Length: 460
Image (tube, rainbow, N blue to C red; front, side, top):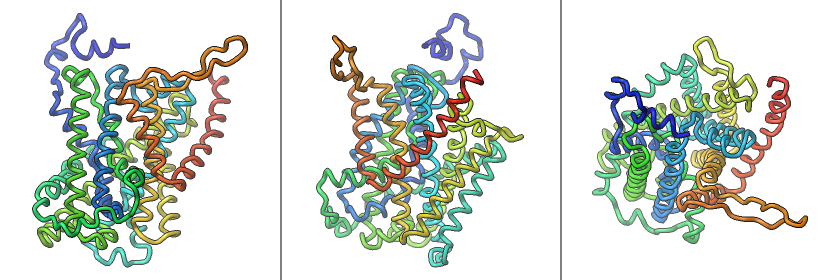
């Protein structure tokens, strides 16, 4: 099990010159990778979505930062002990069998395509800074969001290399609006904008539950930030430390950024904003600051949309190659791209966006539903991986004298327990609507699994 780690870290008996000169990643490089993978467009609209909860929503950010660090430790530990392609899906399949792997892959796939409308809405909202009439055009907001999603899908269909080049162009700009506003904006905070502290009237426990999906959504992707152990200097120590340090940096940026936006933009205005960071920049630096931030967010959102689209196609393809998804998900085009995965995922994401925008009014309502559904589905693989790492599961003891001996609680690690509890808490905070839709989508998976499972004996 540990042999690949020994070989890649240079502890094998035969070391080639290439391996001897192979560059290693230290704690700062790994921490930068963690920050780059976590920070995306999931935060650009969250200050507006959190406005009804006031400054007390910052407590939710602190709690989710702790939960994210624990989840990061879970994935860092799993990657260090048993590197495996497929991430949460692969670990769940190895620990609990093919059905658990299928269920995790299905839920992970749902969480990705359900997040695309939220990312596309962040893109369109900030694009409205340059085209003010966009939000007033009937169907204009939805049409532009759909166009952005399908444009990125077309780029990904040209091949992974094209998607990777596009990602390099956009990823470098994602940190600019966060760092500039989170640090420099502290000098522009108006205390009266932060009062009342908790206008929602919820208890602190209820407030944390209500804000959990919105704050956890910004941390989604922490599982993709784990660096392969073979490229890291002293991976057993570096990866967990870098995960904690990188997640801590992201948490500070999220907390300070939310504080600045809430402190510079009046709460009533913020709740209706489609571009909260740009509005905050306008309050601080005028038109040029607002335009610069909006441009960076537009490019960053497209980059996040591209990155998740690239990942969205790989998850069902990996499951199909293992015989757990229908074969169509594993078919590649002449360019080596799982195009049917992309098309089907985009159709589902488009349907979610169109149905929600046609049935309700208000950007934040649509954004909140997409975030709740995506986050709820993402908690399924997070819960399973917490169980894998901490061995936190209820098991029946062997029957004695024809009677069951009861239940026992397996051994666990504290951070895995925290990750497990916060994942369940996030599902609770997402509310019954998102939970019901997630359950229905998971139940739809059962006939798919049974049809694939029925074919398995004949192919084996």
